[in-house]
Length: 359
Image 1 (cartoon, rainbow, N blue to C red):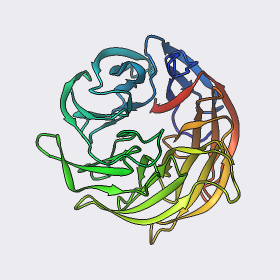
Image 2: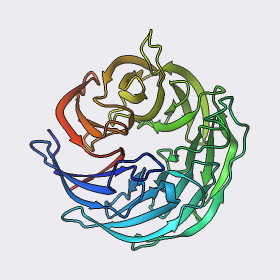
Image 3: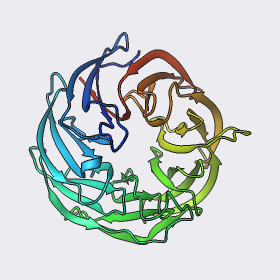
Image 4: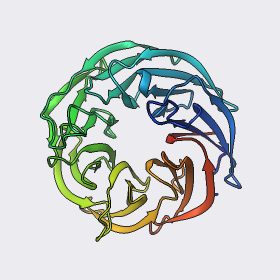
């Protein structure tokens, strides 16, 4: 393991019977910088279904959704140990909160409520505590053709472009990526013009990730197992479709849905997760066009890789498997982008999200 610092890993999971959870709560692990071993140092068991989390940029605070009980919790991070102390909680502003993001100044926290929206905007106090929602953003559109998965709006991600001027919201139910412009002085949001980019009917947009150069973004589509490539205009917040590429190998005929997507810090590679094929797909990025080509598929090491993340150095990729109750780590080849298992396999119930802090 080549990280320069010992890392703290924060692991969220499903805990409730309603979510078929087998986890215990919000867990804190110390990751040894030499051996790569994970040691659990804390578990906050009163946190219910912490299925998505985010840290502020200074590593002082952590925020997580509690999905099934529709609230957002704020925690202070102890600087020396990485342990958590609850600060406060607020209602999520809607049903089934699924994702969070902090604005570039850590002034506001935006929550995506999966079951019909809306997006809730909460001010963040200087001590890390959350205020009640000060803005609710409703999305409008037409449901996609899937009679089960697209019965209403399903915002599944909230992501700022690298400039911090625009907020992008993939909506699985409406087959759209909504774009909001952030007002500099107030920090609140108004719909961009145009207000959204369309996806293919039935695609089911789920998560989106930006290239470091801020001119390209990559959208993983949950329902049709594809990645859509867009050219992004950072001056006007518009998206131009460039490419759609499968996440699956030729000949695969089983059931599959996609979940997570991320771009390597170098900008040379894009990674996506397949649930069903249970793999991580690796793409190479064409530097001149932003388009993708297949590098490899790697077995994820478990069942249902709902979430994965690169460590801060970008040399480890860590996969959380919702249905096999384990976290698996891979070494990243910086030249080829390919993944090699490290042998680290951490047993933990229903893991679905991971966040990092360097000590």
